[in-house]
Amino acid sequence: MKREVLLNPGPVTLSDRVREALTRGDWCHREPEFAALMQSINSRLTKIYAETADGFAAATLTGSGTSAVEGMIQSFAPREAKTLVVSNGVYGERVAAMLDMQNKPYVCTDGEWLEAIDMSRVTALLEEHPDVTTVVSVQHETTTGRLNDLSELGELCKARGLTLLLDCVSSFGCEAIEFDAWNVGAVAATANKCLHSVPALSFVLARNELWKQPSQACSVYLDLHSYQKAQYDTGFSPFTQSVQPAFALDAALDELQEQGGWQQRGESYRGRAAQIAATLEGCGVKTLLPKQEYSSVLWTWLLPEGWTYERLHDRLKTEGFVIYAGQGNLASSVFRIAHMGDIDSDMDRLCELLKEAFS
Ligand SMILES: *Cc1c(COP(=O)(O)O)cnc(C)c1O
Image 1 (cartoon, rainbow, N blue to C red):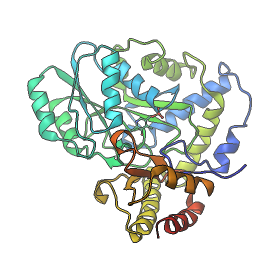
Image 2 (cartoon, protein in one colour; image 1 turned 180 degrees about the horizontal axis):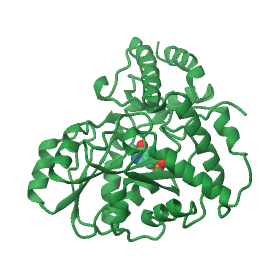
Image 3 (spheres, protein in one colour; image 1 turned 60 degrees about the vertical axis):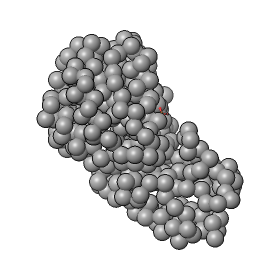
Image 4 (cartoon, rainbow, N blue to C red; image 1 turned 30 degrees about the vertical axis):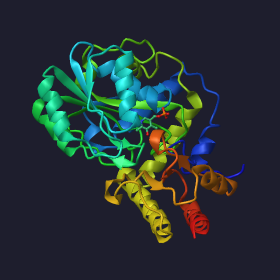
């Protein structure tokens, strides 16, 4: 197998152990051994963060991260009361599109992609719409690499008793999430980003109180209450689960634990980010956002004069490294580098290649 070093925001370069786990066996998803595995995975997912070990339960479904986010919005965003979407990128806008398609009442801050969360806009919308009960935001906006500072928003949710639903698809497993201080009701995430497994399974962790309320879903496949209940009670899922990716996720969770959990994973990403930044800044390449606003997971860089994204991408791809383009208006002016996956042994070579390209 030719080694591909994936610097896109998931799927990631796998460890040999996770890749080999995919061939553990041809299991039936309706046999007790698979049910036991599913229950073990759900239980381990709630233990990655200490605050969710009690009082939260997981539902795992077959689909990419978007399916978990949409399942969360389906199941928990109310049909009658209003939802406030706090958006500053592609993924916040996607949540608004989901509410639109589900015909659920909502308002959206429609924040600029390059700006932080605008709390004055949030409070103005809450003032104007006193029937808002639920707030949705994105912790790490992968559009730009911004780690949204959720402390003020979360504290406001806590003070006003608003349920906060978070898209943590590209931050779960490496960034701090203040479940209690921010009044987090549920988070959506996926196996194939910071947890370093394959794409196929994604999941939602939610408070038991939320699981006990009637589902707000207007979809059969994305009604997460049905998954949570069946998986908790029996280990089985309403529909066929992707079996081999469950083996891989199981192995990836072993690795995360052995490697020191989410804090240590965040540290390792920050180390990689610093090494890349030292290289690129040494060549005069600049970041799109101020560095302190970035997550540990992914940074967006401005293409230097004379470079197109395609030229840089193709040059690195020939050497086995896959970078990522910008979205929307940013497509022609930036490139993105993610720091996830089993790539410690590739970092020096990546930095050499970047240096050769830009100096
Ligand atoms: C990757 C990602 C998603 C899910 O995207 P998929 O294409 O479904 O994998 C959702 N939200 C954020 C913030 C992401 O980075």
